[in-house]
Amino acid sequence: MGSLPKKTLQRYLSQLQEHPLRTKVITAGALSGVSDVVSQKLSGIQKIQLRRVLLKVIFAGGFLGPAGHFFHTFLDKIFKGKKDTKTVAKKVLVEQLTLSPLNHLLFMIYYGVVIEKTPWNLVKHRIKKTYPTVQLTAWTFFPVVGWINYKYVPLHFRVILHSLVAFFWGIFLTLRARSTTLALAKAK
Image (cartoon, rainbow, N blue to C red; front, side, top):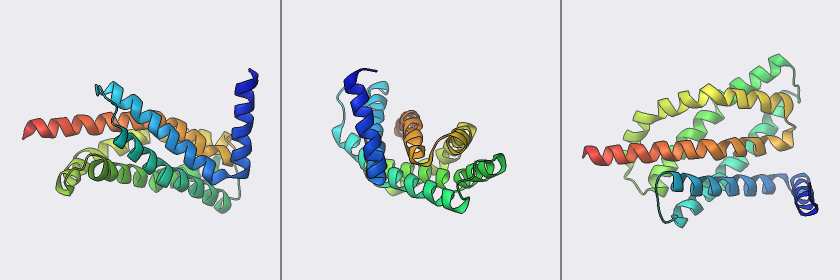
């Protein structure tokens, strides 16, 4: 590893140790912003919508980063940091039945109401139509991410791993929301 990347990584890890919440908030926001730029390009948007990128950064930094930080800390306190198979399974189950559905629901509401400025009745209709599929799809692979996270990843890196996975998941959700919006617009 070259000297600049090594120093950058060392500074990042130092910040993560000294200011864990702030570092996770910034990381979640930055990865969400980059994820949105990628999803905009993949969905065919020619000119990057900076307002949308900023709003996604705000959502990830203002909710996902802090929620993940406090949730993982809380679970570790409840389960006393144990990593045996039974405890890891319980942590994954708790996460998948609480934080996961909440994250997806809030993202879909935020995306529709705040980012797209869609009227509430249309957002509600979209959520009724697509939320079950989004959540069921999340349950096909996020339990594996959770298992890896709780079994092998130290507490202070768990939000970072989730943010990295959320980078790709955010692209999926954005493209899915965009295609649903286009389908609803064509139906009218």
